[in-house]
Length: 309
Ligand code: FAD
Image (tube, rainbow, N blue to C red; front, side, top):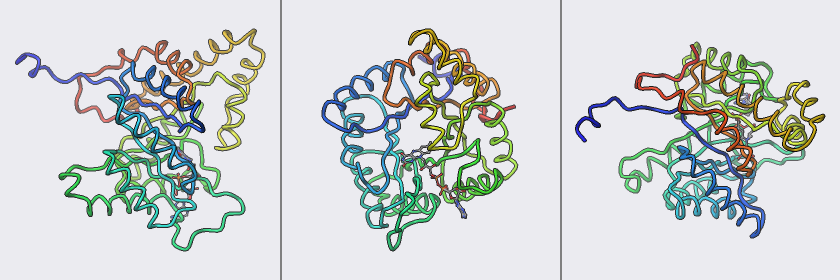
């Protein structure tokens, strides 16, 4: 035991999965199976998405309670500020803390076209980060001195509303200064885009980990929808290969290989981990994990900063 304690800790890259809450009782049953399958890979946490304006908060809590009560996993719960009043955000944060949630991803959310903002609605995610820190201070007794891990979004490919990529960096600086502990990136399809984001962020003084996010790129229809929502387009050659695949097995093989190569590119460059957008489908995520063999990036270097070299 003493030798074990003397050994420097070995650290695998961080691993997390994104799940969205169920839409019905039947889909919640399927979702529980997915959570059980993903749990076998011992992720550091699973993230639980939420729709804007508290539209599905009861379902968010349902999945969160399942993760907290029935698994050994830690949830990272997404909160969005669009369509929410400040007092509702405070109530939401408190409801999460009371359940034992200690990780929140602070987001603005996409603004619907005909949106009429609430009276005291936050225009940007940074204010939600500040609010979470405020509630944390007020609830310090409950937290027994512990902290809430607050994450934010980062964009290797320019955010659709942002005038320039440098503006995205300025926004990331403001979110880090407001108290974010880490960021998870939007999808991207070129390792250079991620490495460039990290280099620019570091030059601007952002020193929090920037965890790259990936979608298992096996379904061309899903990639098209993702492009419409996020403005991030998958390479044309990949879409063509997926669309002309012989069958489902061939499509999964092509998409998994592309995704694994992309993840290898950023892990080789020093990324601190990976976050998989699962779309509640464990099979594709597990294909990626198996082919990736994460253990090979295990490091004993505790000074590892997670910076692409
Ligand atoms: P912000 O950081 O506030 O940025 C929003 C826009 O405002 C950007 O264009 C930014 O450049 C601009 N901006 C910010 N600050 C300023 C300023 N001071 N002056 C001028 N312009 C500024 N959406 C959901 O609805 N639910 C989810 O669960 C969800 N999960 C996500 C998880 C991840 C990891 C990511 C990357 C995105 C997620 N999204 C989710 C989508 C996200 O809500 C959208 O991308 C949204 O459009 C921006 O959110 P944000 O938190 O990045 O906003």
